[in-house]
Image (tube, rainbow, N blue to C red):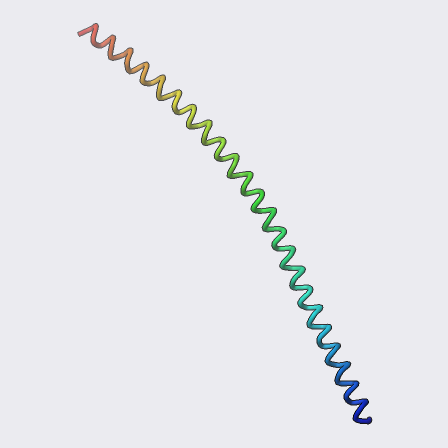
Length: 86
């Protein structure tokens, strides 16, 4: 094999090795892109869940405020009745 043939063979092997490396890197980039997309979906779902929890908490706090006012009213009535009885 002539020296030029050997050089051409080495260049071909180098190009082939580079192509294989690029293909592996492309596969890794694709995998990372898929993971990133999946994480984006998960973040979106978590955001929706958090929003629902916040809305439920707001409703619960409003109901708790109503209950507190009702209990204050009942306590006031009981105090008034107790004052009349004494």
